Length: 295
View (cartoon, rainbow, N blue to C red):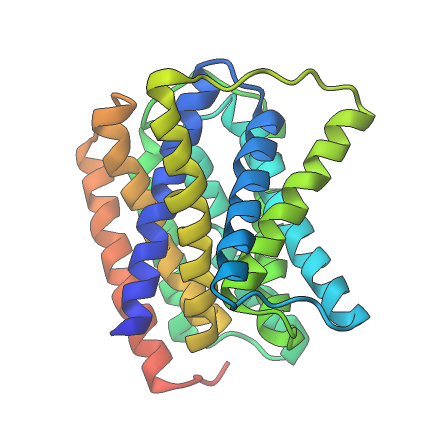
């Protein structure tokens, strides 16, 4: 129950992050400036909180330090740098579904490393999940014109980056784990994007304040610190492939929240897609409990 509770909490909070980020981008905030402000502050707050609780883990070896930098680069700088740039041109639901192709790349990366093919049941579950979330946004939740293929490609690059970070975290055996790894990777990724903005002289726009401050705090704490903390905790309890399968819930939650917040609308096709996602998640959990299948 703890494992499934962590997964559900992580997916719901991550979905709120897509919607809240889109609201800020619609307000004219530069995508990279939003990455820097969100994750630099989230990482710093998480590390301070862990320090005063006596639970902060520091990289003790060069290998640990290298691993933390790799995770921060892949799972914060690349994933959200590319995703937020694309979200300025695509809807939150579109970014969500493209990002959540990540489980497919995890399965492929794990198969390449282990030199084995995924089981038939696992492949069917992944395909069904992807078909479901594609149906959810197929008719266009919050349509925003006809963006260039570059933005789709950038988002898929971010999804592959997240997949690589997921596999690396599970197999790397880092000395820094859980909430500490979560804090370090957000801070490192945010600082990397800040350095990138400095090098390329990207103008920094100010974040909205007053009534939008609560939204920004939600984006920093629950949607960043808590969501990734729960994700890392779930990853330690289950396998990378099994845990990644449940991330198909994020596009569903994003689409649901987009209706009242971003004024999106649903179609019958999208409702059918939601049912397909639920079936895919159920099948994924059965495959996980049954153990590995023959390729």
